[in-house]
Image 1 (cartoon, rainbow, N blue to C red):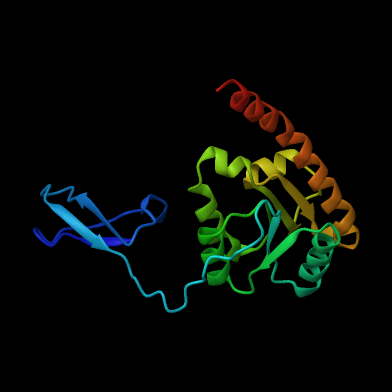
Image 2 (cartoon, helix red, strand yellow; image 1 turned 90 degrees about the horizontal axis):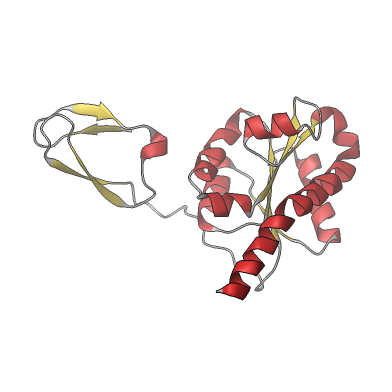
Length: 194
């Protein structure tokens, strides 16, 4: 984002990942040190409203532009009694990820997914740990931990395995359950003591 100081007229750029998610924020000009108030675009006419699900419901967010794969993923979750929130467009996906809490997120790997991951990168460690993020239709082999780590997700499912997608989704859900179990036990232990 480019910002121009109203006092000395100096212009400078702030990386998008450093901009707070607020309607207005303040900073000091790096040149003259005067305070600058930055008002973000507040047009909310197209904003997505927060979604409402039953208390303690498990909710999966699906942003997969490939409708065939998205349909199979949604059916997979429906069969397990998991609520589903789908995004059809990138702006809708970004708004939903900002406004809602999801237990599971399934995102298709493509060049348009990066803004969604920019939102996820801003989450604190606890929030990120509580979301099982699965990247589908990737250009790598399925279930490769190092590839998942490099992409900042829990699991990757390769496009070469799309015909066995449900099998790999089941594996991804099981691996996450194993991953989160020690954290849940530690949390329960802390609540018992304090």
